[in-house]
Amino acid sequence: MPLPFLWVRRSALLLSAACVLALMGCSSTTPPPGVTPVTPFDLARYEGRWYEAARLDHSFERGMTDVSATYQRQADGSVRVLNRGFDTGKKDWRQAEGKAKFTGDFNTASLKVSFFGPFYGGYHVVALDADYQWALVLGPDRSYCWILSRTKQLAPAVREQLIARAQALGIDTQALIWVTHERTDPQP
Image (tube, rainbow, N blue to C red; front, top):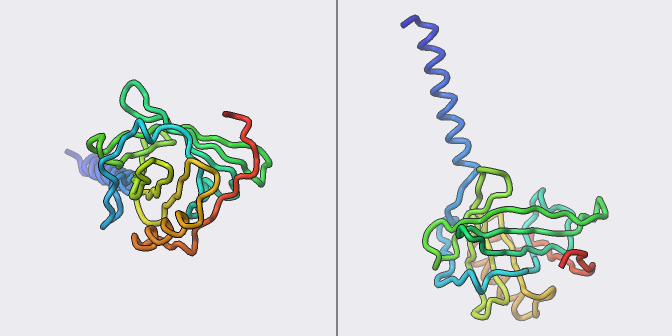
């Protein structure tokens, strides 16, 4: 084989390997080290609308208030995820639809979620009320954290309990953004 062909072939293989590694880094679906997702987990009880009580800041939610997430099981076993919130900068409602899939058995609250085609990120319920009224959710690492509630406001004692739980898991709870819910969402 001529030398240029080997160089091109080797370069293509290295580029392909680099792309695969980059994609793997962008799509971590495992829980952060030392974090155990809730088990047993009942998706039927988790379905429906949850209000975002608090979150760590990320560009995709920056400036958003009145944020909610609705989960709905699909016939293929996946979960439809609909996130909605009010963009205070644009003065308009925004929404994003995604798909979640369990990363293992359906009895463990460890899923992967995608809003962008083949790119998935971890979604791990790490604390859950026995009556499915509040949840603490982490992403693929400790920089992703959400406190969810079935109601727009958490009782102060529950709020403090969830802050303590998040702190024990290594979350920077001082950085939590507490989400206001003052607007009426035009979509039920």
